[in-house]
Length: 125
Image 1 (tube, rainbow, N blue to C red):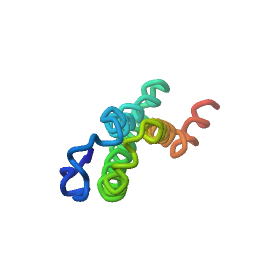
Image 2 (cartoon, rainbow, N blue to C red; image 1 turned 30 degrees about the vertical axis):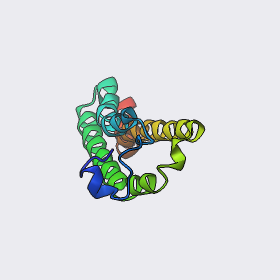
Image 3 (tube, helix red, strand yellow; image 1 turned 45 degrees about the vertical axis):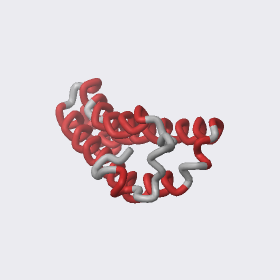
Image 4 (tube, rainbow, N blue to C red; image 1 turned 120 degrees about the horizontal axis):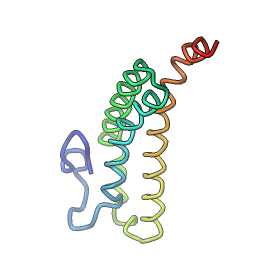
């Protein structure tokens, strides 16, 4: 399930008669999760700079993930598409994809804190 280009361009060796090993919801979570989680820390803290920085970081992380997925992950999945049809491997790959989506969301949520942490400490004094 590519983000920026069609699947026949990102993974030309994919077998379209087989189902794709990763559930589409994992792709949605990996793309929309950072965009939604980035501004959340700003909303919680009530700081508009955190909201803006979180949104920018979320969009940047999402598009970097989309590019990396199109460039590396999709061709690799297409190469091993047939062995990944086994249910145990399919569950493992989907679990890894959802964990990756959660890590991207956490990264975009914690990035404003890491970048603007001195602002938080100054406000507390």
